[in-house]
Amino acid sequence: MPSPVVSSAALAQLPSLLPKLVSLNLSYLENVNDAVVAAIASGCPRLRELRLAYCIQITDVGLRAIAGYLGGTLQVLSLHSDDLCTDVGLVAVCKGCPLLAELDAAFLRFLTDVVVDVILVHCARLVKLALHGCLQITKKARARVQQVWDEQAAAARSGGEFVTADGDLAATYDRSDKSSDDNGTSSDEDDGC
Image (tube, rainbow, N blue to C red; front, top):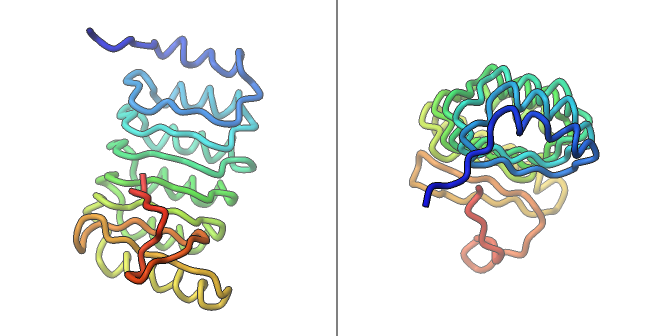
């Protein structure tokens, strides 16, 4: 049986029906595009969590709309495997959304070390970051994230955790307060997605 398809027009009407929405998961919906993202971002100003994984029509235009409209509220953003997103859009999100605590940018193939530098400067509240599958982000940049978070954790006396998801080229970073077992891994397993 084929999965139901929700049109872009219907998705763009969500804000008029649910203007007080605080959490929205549109992952895997094939008709989510920049216009839908802009309509949701502008019409749902209280949105704190937005999951757009595998929404492959989203580009930097949609990410700039998120940054412009949701900068004062957004705390969780998932863009996992949204192939058309680049450094330009993610830099806008990082600079425009200072409350961001979780960012899933895994498998965004056009991201580079530029994004890592911006994340380290502008995302002070970030506790979870997924960058696995971003093959243009170098080992050196990944090591910088770990080094900065380790230094912050030592200064704050709270744990910083690094989980290698895919060998040396992939990583999920988690610096939330969790107890660690003897191997240095979190007892609350998380795939970073």
